[in-house]
Amino acid sequence: MEKKPYRIATERPIAGRMRKVDEVVNLTAREYAAEIGWGGLEPVEPEKPAKKAAKAAEL
Image (cartoon, rainbow, N blue to C red; front, side, top):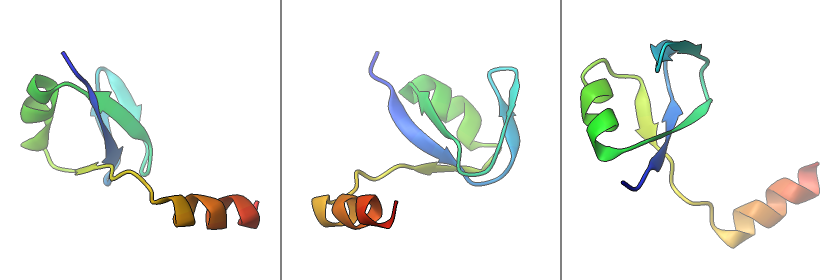
């Protein structure tokens, strides 16, 4: 099964561990369906190359 990244929007437990805001978790479609009812998950969109370069320049 393919896993997709999701960002934690609200501090909450997933897989028996408390997750912090902005932490990224990889979930299968089945895991996501089970967790989305509790809220606090946002799909992670791939960054565009320009954003990656700007972010790297800031560091």
